[in-house]
Image 1 (spheres, helix red, strand yellow):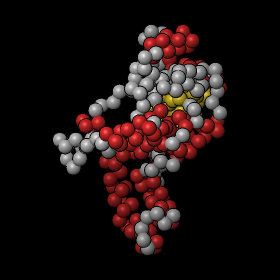
Image 2 (cartoon, rainbow, N blue to C red; image 1 turned 60 degrees about the vertical axis):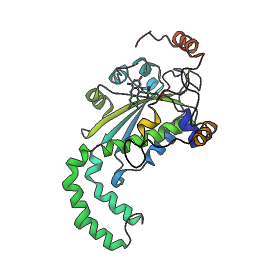
Image 3 (tube, rainbow, N blue to C red; image 1 turned 135 degrees about the vertical axis):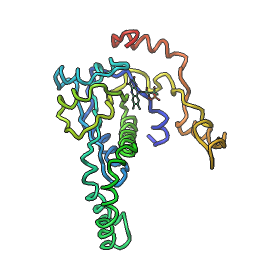
Image 4 (tube, helix red, strand yellow; image 1 turned 180 degrees about the vertical axis):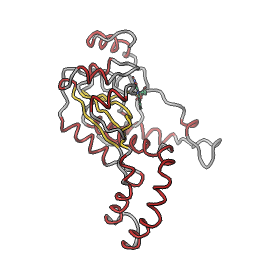
Length: 261
Ligand SMILES: Cc1cc2nc3c(=O)[nH]c(=O)nc-3n(C[C@H](O)[C@H](O)[C@H](O)COP(=O)(O)O)c2cc1C
């Protein structure tokens, strides 16, 4: 699948086949895609525990409680618990030196190593408490999770991100370090719904979201480019497709899902 089509096809798939396990190789590819994401200072603070519903205790599953549409946790064969490890930021200097050795950063190798030790690393250390509040690290983790999601779609899998309400319970049950911040729980499995999942979900208007040169000057939308994106699959039929109600009724019965939950 081309990347534009993967982006267009990606939905939050809330209805997964509870009985069909996911091959670990497919999860491995998702994790590798996440690992390949770009991080400020190359810190790589994203971590994950892959939880297989059929292999873990009820206590662990209960700790993965989700407040909105919580039934998803009970039907998903796999839940990836994505978290951020603040400890990675403490050894960021090592990552910068690695970038120099990889010849990705700096021109003269020795001079750049020296400049890192004398200027840049002390600067980052002094600013670290502030950097943690900027959201940069969470943003980088989000990019990793997004890449993993696209690889999931490419492999015929469905996923949905769920906000997590029980950080301490998750920390204890899964053995996360004290330096961990739970980001999101991502259900993974084979969709029980059609690939379209009711159609592409609504988005805020393009012209309200994006600007050219300054706010107040909407970024121009070229109709020809829109047509191209329809052809590539990046833009697809909007939800709800005419048969979505019937699909939802069918899925609700099959998966025994309450009207609200
Ligand atoms: C960080 C994050 C947290 C989310 N949390 C939940 C959640 O707790 N429950 C849920 O049903 N959907 C959750 N979603 C899914 C969004 O509601 C969904 O993305 C939105 O409805 C748009 O639909 P789409 O992803 O299919 O385009 C979450 C999505 C993200 C990115």
